[in-house]
Image 1 (cartoon, rainbow over the protein chains, first blue to last red):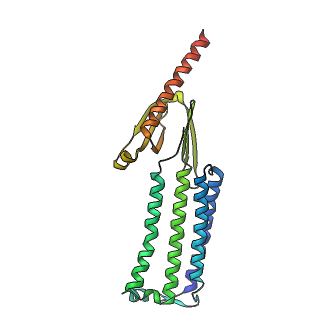
Image 2 (spheres, each protein chain N blue to C red):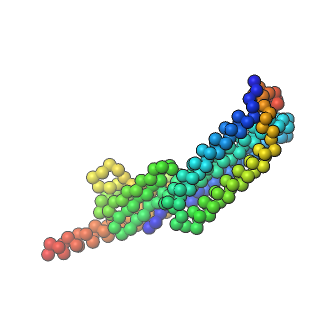
Image 3 (tube, rainbow over the protein chains, first blue to last red):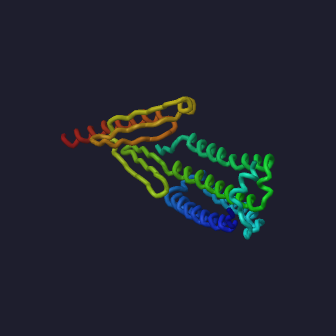
Length: 81
Length: 168
């Protein structure tokens, strides 16, 4: 059974969209009720920087992949063992 | 008094995040050294997507828990106690009670780490209501309970004096 790789990419992009929505609400909540101390600022800026870094590293690897290929579902077990 | 939860709550968030972050790394080392799984471009792409999604989840989990920790605040003044509690992303509860309504103030330091690191819960029972305030995992719980008791006693004493003055 073969699944085109771009299906996973599409799923990943939807996941990123959900992640960004939740991030927005977290940042909104923090900006509305928080930010009294330096610690809160530091953690929030770290969160943004780490998120951007994770997305950049993911993009670096994802950009190298040929997404027109297919993924063999039952081949996974054979490859591992 | 402006009270947050003890730093152990932040430590727990960090420890859990580091633990979860190590899992894909260990899987990667295992797959790289003992299988040829990642040599296949399609499987590698699948692995990259899974790991990326997992790390983003861990980062979001850590930050959401920090927001929850940071926005849980208890404020004690010489007139009232204010309880501000963030319950997830979309729920925030703020309640306040005058010190005169406080009846029973109990501190609870339970467990090895709570005793060593000096944190615990403080329960405040308010008059004529089933609801009670709970200060969760706060530092120096015994001391906080004692101070609130003192404040309540002072408040009640002051109120009695004012009433007597009014009557005379």
